[in-house]
Length: 447
Image 1 (tube, one colour):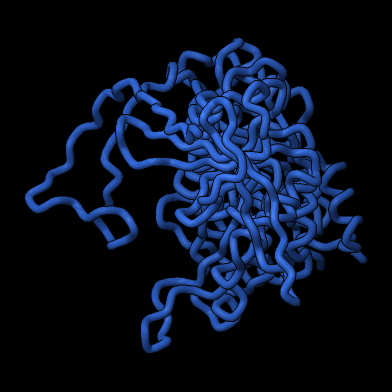
Image 2 (cartoon, rainbow, N blue to C red):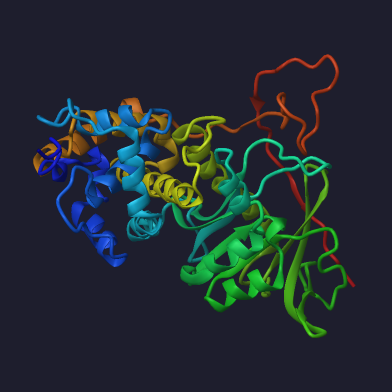
């Protein structure tokens, strides 16, 4: 006698996110990698795609709980949930590539023309940034991803997955990503992100400075704005009328060959603090004024806020991924990215209906609403799905957190010594304080 789920699994959906992760899209991703089912079973490939996405949506829940969330309201399925090992084997059969393809099929720019903070002089604003996710300790994960080690070579903490993302600044939507480990450099993971950046202005931190990354993005039709390292572009080749100057950055290309690119250097201070140096391929001061680029660079933080949504709110603070096998770790990460992009789409849609900035829509409240939609089987019929989305959009009072307040706090940590300053002796946590207007002072290089 077959399992009770056989013949019923095609009823499994992902609540409100089914609007974007449709059964048709899932089947296309499955077929693209030859993962179609050879015979009927309790856990067909389509069900497993929704289950893995459910693992990301309900990261802190067990396999049983995630399955219960997905099927508890479907007659005949809630009382016959397969065991954990069956789900694990089905995940292994599915592999990571299908979930990566699901992400790539749903991902894309979201900001409509004219959305504040999304464009600069006709160029769509994006930012490249990276973050880490802890993976469970296993020999396979440590070999694949690497991790911090003590001076004697013994492992410290967990193996770490490195994720580098290309994020749309105005919406926090992840447009593209690459997944590697601590053993992979940020620059190597960032370079392929250039593929679909034509017409964008891409902002990066100094960890991404390099001729290879620079050329990949500019050849793709993007412009770049990157913070310089201390030793980058120190020798002016030509002083420009606005006080900026042209210089070169270089990189060894093997066999005594050096690749170089010409950059424009902008130097400035914020509130008489440290001197900040930016590099850009926008060489014409009339086309891209230095003060505007200096103010624009700090929009890079929007990518960090997007990463925080994934790491802290969606996954949960200090949570470890589930999988002890590298392939399943990749599968999880792509599921997290796909879920986050769908949530970003929902936020942009709601904001657009009410003509407000997407920043005003609470990510956490939308996340919770989507979780409820899965449990309530809100996507069991197209009519129910439409009704749920309309009802959610009408609850603006609950979703709108108001304009973002200009607040700041000291960047200190309490748990572990990292690159930031330790709290001073006798320090106690202080409330955030109102941000004062910042004064940007250009540091012109004049002949």
